[in-house]
Structures are given as structure tokens and as C-alpha cells.
Image (cartoon, rainbow, N blue to C red; front, side):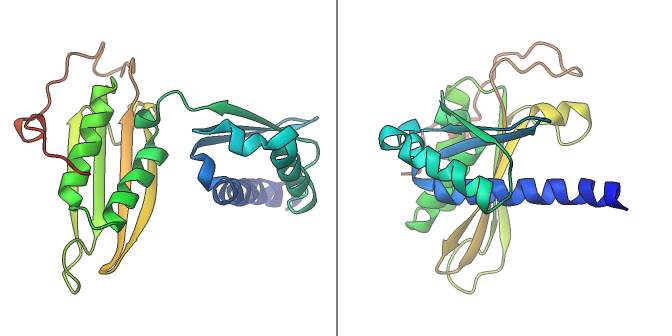
Length: 212
């Protein structure tokens, strides 16, 4: 039973730590968090838009985070490393947060999806999909989904593991709208498709419908 409990608790604890870090470092623009446990240390790699906000003046912020992980979550010898996100337009979590920000300020959902997916593809992605689900429209409207997809995005099997994704919720006057972003990064080669071919944007996107 002890071994089974260890395997159950570990993913839950990992999830709690990731949510804590995402909340604490929201202003730094968190793109990705990777946690790896070893017998000696727990390595936590954080990819953000603004590393300075994570490190803080003379390392004050990162030292405080390290101490909190040690005392609040009971992590022995946590080691945090911070790297700058190379391209925010290819990070699903950052794209989803941007979509939510636009939607919450009243931008048309369809236009937002078109604008963002164009940005993703212009930055070399092999495929991308952005889906908004919820009460899209005036207050009292029925829940529905809007989906924009370009390129190849597998949904199942081993190829799906090569796709990065994130789901964020936008709070609007009419209700919650969930935004799901899936991105196949530049250079991704799917076993069932071979080398990626040149991707042409659909006419509705190529016309330049904006989202801002």
C-alpha cells in the first residue's frame, strides 16, 4: 500500500507545485514548467518571457520561491533554473493566455482565433489548432465551440505526443470560455507523415482578419 500511495501522491504534489508556481510567476509570463525528481535534488526548470521577474533583485525572488517549496511543499533540496522563452508565439500556454486576454476585453472570438493561429504559423509551426468553447456571444447565448486549425495536428497515438498543448479559461460577462491551443513546433516530423511540407493558409486566414 505504501508503494501505491507514493505513486498516487507524486503526480498530485507535482500538479500542486506547478499551479503554485504558475500563480506566483504569472507576471513573468510562464511558458513551461518541468519538474524532475532525483535521489539527491528536485530540479525545477521554468521557462518564462521575463526571467528577471523570477530571479528578482540579487536573487531575492528565486530564493524566496526555493524556501517556500522547501517549507510549504516539503521538497528537499529544490533547485530552480530559469530560461527565457525563445518564441512566445510557439508556446501554447502563452498563446492561450493572450487569447483569453483579448476575449475578456471584448474582442470577437472568431477574429481572435484567426489572428493568433496566423501568428503561430508565421513562426514556423508545422500545425496548429485553437479552440474556444463556452457561451460565445451575447449574455444568455447557448454554449458552442469555435475551432480554427491549420496544418497537421494528430489527436491520438504516438504522433500526438509530439504536439504541445495548453488549456486556459477566460472569464467574460456571458460566462466562462475555455481556450485550447495545440501546436506542432517547427521541425516536427510525424512518423506517419514524414518530412513536413509547405503549409498554405486557408483563404479566410490569408485575407488578414485581425483579432486585436
